[in-house]
Amino acid sequence: MLNKRLLIKNLLAHSDENSFFDKKLKLNFSSREGKAKFLKHVCGLSNSNPKNNSYLVIGVRDSDNEVVGVDFFDDSKIQNLVNAYLENAPFITYENIPFPHLPKRKVVGLVTIRPRNDDKICALRKNIWKYYGGMVFFREGSNTKPKNFDIKLIDENSKIVKSIEDHSQNNIKMTLDGVFDFFEDNKDYHPQYNVFKEYFVLCYAGKRKKLNHEDFYTRVNIELVNEQVKLFYSDQDQIQMQIKEDEFRILEYVRLCIGDHYKNYPLEKVHIKFKDNMMYDIQSELVFDPPKFEKKFLHHIYNSGQQLLKKIKNNGRLSQSELKEVRNLPSIYLICYLNDFDEAIDELNAMKDHLKALDSLTYQNYKDSVRVLRKIKYS
Image 1 (cartoon, rainbow, N blue to C red):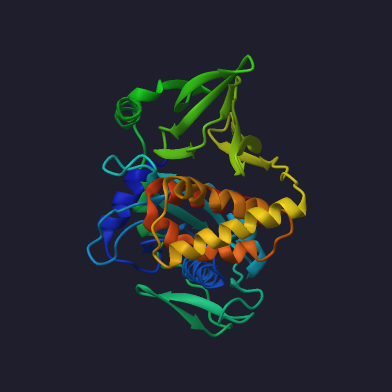
Image 2 (tube, rainbow, N blue to C red):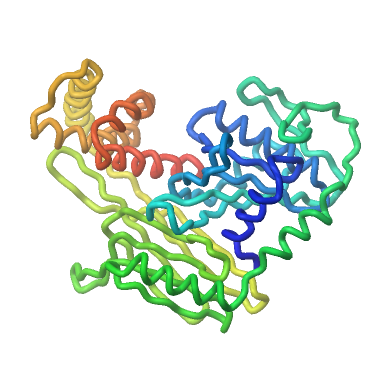
């Protein structure tokens, strides 16, 4: 089994970006430009490595190779994006890899690109941003460039990639060190571990609380220590966890505010299933049912939010009550959008930098709302 943290270290140490490996400071899936650039790199890496895995490492500064990390990204539908826009699309996985020196909410993103080995060229299926349907990309050194469609697929990197992966295999010492590190890093959140199929070591942590005779957890962190992969992380206050013989089940709730009222809504079910063949699957199901409100009430709330946002843009001084309202703006705009206020999504995207400048809690509320919206869109 690959130790993904060690794999990233070996990729970064092997050489600079090349035809089987690329690194990025961050990805942006909220814009067509960001999606298009991601698809270009996936297409180029897939065509340049028709017989082996290629990798895209996210959260590394290009100038000095420093690992700075990115936010935990839990979008299981990224394969859907690739399938929608790429002909002969490769298989894609996006994994979140914790590094000891990074804050708890930060990880390194690892995108693994595995071609279908059918000797067919991967190409854009349809137009996106400034790229048109039918374009083909290949890697030339550290650059991804468009090429002619009739170019041949050549296997040049299988031996190198195999060597790097062979040197990134897990061992007992790494597993034990990983368990101890997890317990130390999460000592305030009651860390525990469980072994599935006599092979998979899963560590999890979260503070437990009772609500209506049911167990809920807050600030949940779940890692598969064998691979050094963070499988789940949530800042939400209500998570339910259930352990079965060969499954770990999670139900995540999202807290939304409208006016002075808060309510927790079921958001997503996640099932981690462990198999006898030393493999595991992660299946997610969106169970979010958007709350509905009277349009007159929402118009009042929305207009009040617009006034607050205008004041922020003009660098106006906020009172304590206004600051409290601002922290709820992302939730309010999300609810308005889900109630057919189509313009609310553009306003939500436009407020990002302003909310980021206010304080970390307000910005985190913004990111939580965008995350919910992303999940709804993909589903």
